[in-house]
Structures are given as C-alpha cells and as structure tokens.
Length: 108
Picture 1 (cartoon, rainbow, N blue to C red):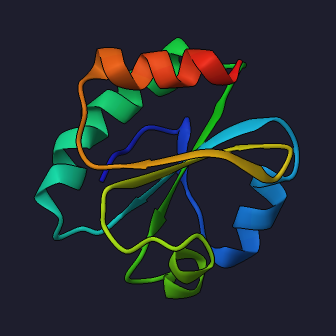
Picture 2 (cartoon, one colour):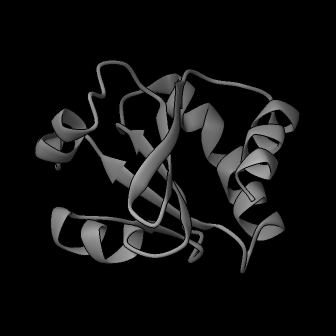
C-alpha cells in the first residue's frame, strides 16, 4: 500500500507490541481494495502530521485474518483507533483528509 516508514505493516506478532502503549491508528486493508488504495496517501500524510503523537500501523486482512476477526472487521477500509491497547473508536470507509484529521485530533 505505501512505502512510508511511519506506517508500519503489522503482523500478529508485531501488533500487540505496537498497540500496548500510546495512541495508535490501525488501518485494516487489502491489496485488491480500491478505497483502501485511495486512502493510502491520506494515511501517509496524517502519519507525518501526527508524527510523535499517534503511531500508525496497517494490517493486511488477507494475511492476518485473525486480527481482522478480533476487531470485527467486516468491511474495508476499516480504521481502529486505540489508546493503551483499548479501542476508543472504530470507523470504516473512505473519507476526506479533513474528516480523518478531526477524528484523530479528538483522540489526543
């Protein structure tokens, strides 16, 4: 999806380590999902804007179906916002950078 170092692609093993502390946005996606591909540049931009405040990760649902099931991901793109390992918000579908940014600001 992206080559941005700030948006780490997470496997099940890395996932629990990343989410346990701080605010984390997880982008559940699939390589074949057009709306997911459209959201990638927005996620990259926001990861730079919120660098040091929010960690960003992405999970390929085809490679990590157990994580998708754990977070009840039935439609993609699906975004899970966590704080210290607990879900504080979950939203799905493509959205504008402005709307997405507002959701992230509320989490801070």
